[in-house]
Length: 193
Image 1 (cartoon, rainbow, N blue to C red):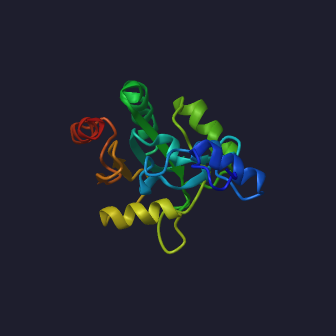
Image 2: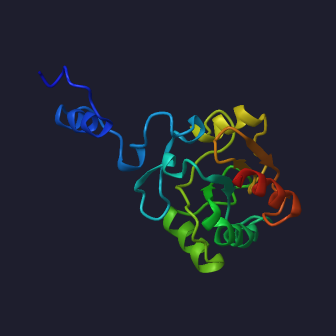
């Protein structure tokens, strides 16, 4: 039987693609087809070292996505976001931070400056990604998809989107909704079910 006539396992398929010189997906992208919801099928550079990260690695988790800024009246929400992450990570929550300079030019720093600020000031351990645009025609593809799914575009820093474990239910929360508010905790509990 020729190699092309055999049924292919997913792992074998990736090996064949790599040997053929075809572009392959990174390790975080090798989830079985259909196991990664469309809303997570994006890749961004990690804030600390610019290494590419596929959001499919968070499939099956409740995902809280937040556009952040270091010099904003809402910046202290980093503390509440980190507390949520620490408290609920074992139950399947991940918080993802997307620094943005879109509102009031309140995130002017470099990736290193932003990362240092987050760690040194608020002890942030949740995943953070490189600065990007989150509103308007130049927004990143994830934020375009979140806007399309919810009809809500960030109006300021620390706008939050909560995606349930299935990747199908997406809620939107304005900047003034504190991470540990009863409204957010109730939505988080539902998303974790």
